[in-house]
Length: 528
Image 1 (spheres, rainbow, N blue to C red):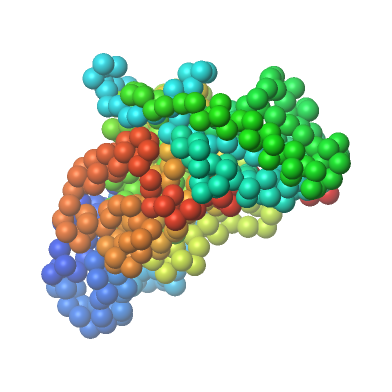
Image 2: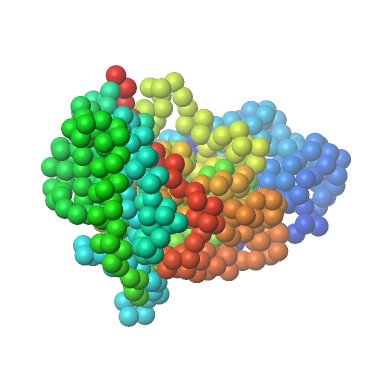
């Protein structure tokens, strides 16, 4: 299929203007002139007449309704973009979903660098600021953690036991500037090849967390005989051991209990040094924001994602960095990003990752269209093309300055892309390892994800879910549909909250203590 067809302003851009404004009395919203489907604003009943259309069957809120007659094989348009093909004749007024449209692959015919004007960046002295931790290496932290990293799953329990000895009421009570001692354990590190994508991913993640701006001190704990040797990792990244960077192996120390005791002692030595920091005024240009969506629904590309895109544009305008990820969830919309690439080399890097994913999925007996989950489909999303067109809206409208491998250090400001899976914990682990010190997470079905060491805010796509899960949702972008708020208004609200959270205000996921178990390095390759 061709993914290059479009009409007017792309709906995936954060500057989206609705063809028809949300109006509950009409019952649906049309997103673009070219669209032959519209989105139900409420549950619509079979036989009901809305805007001279008689419904042929029930259409749940957030799902699609045909407003043009289609014959089998016709293109189905939403956002003025192709989201699938009709698998049967579809009459006006019919529910359009998985039973009557299908996915087909992309044709990989791309335009490069046609929409890549340099963003208007505010002068340094006029940029927004936040209160952050200025590190000696020039990075700026939004939090101040001590991290305990396992090199292998065999040391996972040891690092957890060491971290469990520290909490705000006991050993941390005298160190108010430390946000916590957190263990980052995982399920790999051995039984893998000592080279290749899987090994490189793990090493980049571990070192990315070890030198993260939100981490003041690090203890790495291994077993001793694993493939992923701490000594080789330290040598590779030229790490200098000292009070705030310590390493040890269970076999050398003399077993589990001795390792836990020794680990606790070493963390205690770090506490007064790590606590000796204070927040100071810093430019927003020091912020790197991980853009994420999970539990998406039919409203994601209409409300929360475009609003987050607006906030991403504000961040870029202030010299900061916005990081789009989840490669399987830009599939079918990558042509919108190649047009925004700063140069053809950057655009081709993205295309190369798309081609890698097609091969990777095929080798494992899957399809790129497997990505929409059962929850996504219940919420109104039908194909990966539809999901991706909404997902790329998180990236705003500015040019694409870089494309990074999983967990690769992000060294350019502006809007960039990182190759990650769509699985949220694995994706964000890579973005944080790359340097993201904040996370913005949109959700339609209702994710309760939390992240350490980088705080995560949750943005609801619809008011119904927000009201049901308000204890977990920091912002209700559903107001764009339910109350007539503008994308700009909600986008500004997101940006302002990000600055408050970066300055130390707790997100709701932090208040609930989430983030200790969401460290998931992307595992690629054979386990032997």
